[in-house]
Amino acid sequence: MAATRARRQLPGSVARHGWRCAATFASPWRWVRSAGCFLALMCLLQAVGCASLGRGTPAMPVVRSLQDLMPHGDRDHFVYVWQRFENGQPVADGVQVEHVTAGANGEFEVSLSENGVAVGRMLLRDLADRLVLLFEEDMVRGFRISYDPPLSQIQLPLRPGRYESSASATFTGLADGATIGVAPVTQQVEIKPGSAVDSRVGRYAQSVVLGLVRTLRVPDGTEELRTETVVVPGIGETSSTGNTPETLQMHRELACAVIGGRRLGDCAGLDKAWKGRRTR
Image 1 (cartoon, rainbow, N blue to C red):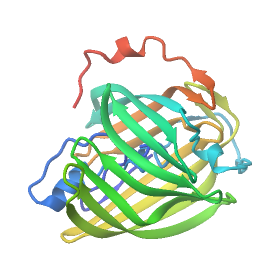
Image 2 (spheres, helix red, strand yellow):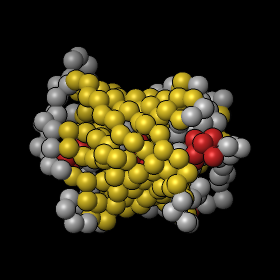
Image 3 (cartoon, rainbow, N blue to C red):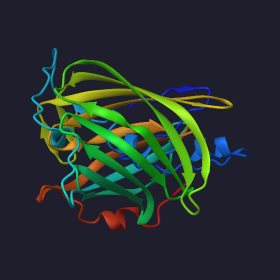
Image 4 (cartoon, rainbow, N blue to C red):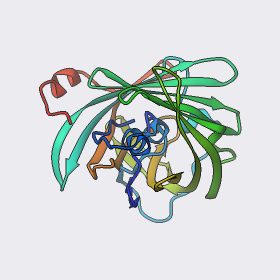
């Protein structure tokens, strides 16, 4: 994903993703900005990281359910290896793990850990024709972002085009439930067919590109996050790239997964690979 910023850039989420943000600010809203690692963006709406294998105009793959775009069966499990860069130089690396817990009424929870530490959680709902985000939590900074109405992430039938949604985002503290602030948020998703991809978990003939622009209007300015994600139907995100508020660039790749009881990739030795490396 190539993420660009308007004024100061919002980070991506536990959606799928929160990559941890390292900055702190003086005012409550600036603190929210530094911590606003929107977890959903980290999971589903992240950047292109896959190598193209084909040429010509790609065709839109057949997608029969939201599970094809973002697998969310109970106990589905995803392991990513990541690196952060500053001015083109690597400054940190490690492992991120996302785990799905299915609930009632189409709801499911995605928890995120980084290098063995819990950093985020989000709750989504599968409405059969739409996937919506109810809330996401940043456990590092200690707050929750709740969306009213739930923020639409993707919808079926899947067709090339641009779709918009909006909601009110309420920020509350996890420790005491106190309201930090409320701000309007708008989101625009552009869908187009992607090329074949070559990933750590396999080679796939077709993919879907999801381009996202999410805008949050807070009292002292406007925050805009732009992302682009390649999704392989049945697998979900295979790799992504994005920027944090400190302009650190982050890249991650799916190393292995368990989807519907089926194992993909090989994570043998990953623990040893990241232990002792730099974290920031």
